[in-house]
Amino acid sequence: MIRTLDNVAKPNPSWNGDHPDTGTSYAPFKVYNIGNNQPVELLRFIEIIEQALGMEAKKNLLPLQPGDVPETYANVDDLINDVGFKPATPIEQGIGNFVAWYRDYYKV
Image 1 (cartoon, helix red, strand yellow):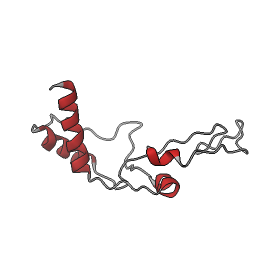
Image 2 (cartoon, rainbow, N blue to C red):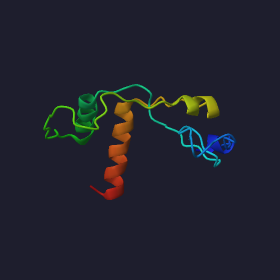
Image 3 (cartoon, rainbow, N blue to C red):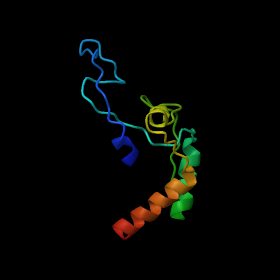
């Protein structure tokens, strides 16, 4: 967050509402994806959550549903290029930290 203060977003002066470029805007703002840009399979993601919680999830595996995305990952190129930061926290550590924070914050 602090690094972005030195790199204020600039508007795209050629942005046109009739033919918008969804990656830019006339308004001076920018949203950064700060995830790890390494894809993780859904079942591995669930397994990591299970380990952090110390319990097994009840899974009901179904075929892909309309609107499901078969593969996705965080593209952090803009974050790296604009502010020189590349997220490197392993997913196991990130989920573990989040579960610990959540349990402490909500006292569960």
